[in-house]
Amino acid sequence: MTVTEPILQIRDLVKYHDTKGGRVHAVDHIDLDLFPGETLGLVGESGCGKSTLGRTIIRLHEPTSGQILYRGQDIAHLSRNDLRPVRRDLQIVFQDPFASLNPRRTVRQILSEPFSVHGVGTKAERSEQVNDLIAQVGLHPSFAERFPHELSGGQRQRIAIARAIALEPSTVVCDEPVSALDVSVQAQIINLLGQLQADMGAAYVFISHDLSVIGYLADRIAVMYLGEIVEIAPKWALWRRPLHPYTQALFSAIAIPEPPSKARKHRIIIQGDIPSPIDPPSGCRFRTRCPHAMPICSEKSPKLTEVGDGAKVACHLVNDA
Ligand code: SF4
Image 1 (cartoon, rainbow, N blue to C red):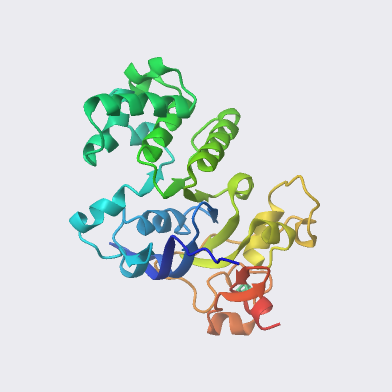
Image 2 (cartoon, rainbow, N blue to C red):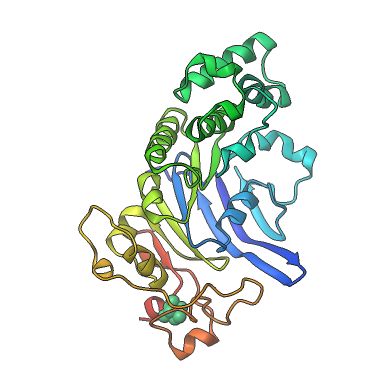
């Protein structure tokens, strides 16, 4: 059996933001692998650090420390110049397509930009590639001459996706790509992302606060809480048996059209607000809201530990059982 090498290996990655109120622990010592062609879902409440993690691993944010190995090369601290050849391989689709598209440029100009920035093709070839991209994301050729304000939210997100895939990247971070869209349009965009991935074989990091949205595309799911990964598992394993109390609470809040696991039979209400990432709780960061917290939980930070089925969990209840 050949073992596929990860395309991205994140090692002990840290991203802190210094603010007036103190140091925000947005991403705190995270290890993660991303394999070619897979979709890794990243889920957690707003403010848990998932967007910061997504942006840091493609170097939109400067990491505080740690390694980002892309095809074996550590890109965590590469200069802007040295990063250039890698940049085209690592793309992002943002939540708000209106904010991410230049309002003064036509769709043709927006989609030509990745080719001109990276010096790909002649003018005539670029024009042809733009036409192909517009067709690939399911829009009529006439959209090329329109401006972003002339498009609906779903059409704008299609253009943002076309721009992200223009240079056939190996990795695309999809940062809440459907949360700003009408529910009726969300499924179309998710289907489009799935179709494009099947065609081009890129790996996705699909970020969402909504586990049910993540469930459509993800092969594996990582659950984040206050800057840390508390559970990571293949989707089928997580669906069958979420182990971390926080994951169980997330699952209990959604309706999944599959046999409910024991943990999903009743709604688990997480008490209290998410603590400040400036001063996270000692030991397990979830302990202030966990219905199963024990004395050890405030003293010792649980490590992300393998528990079988390709799953890893960071919880004393599971790891020390
Ligand atoms: Fe709850 Fe303790 Fe597990 Fe944290 S380590 S999730 S507080 S049982």
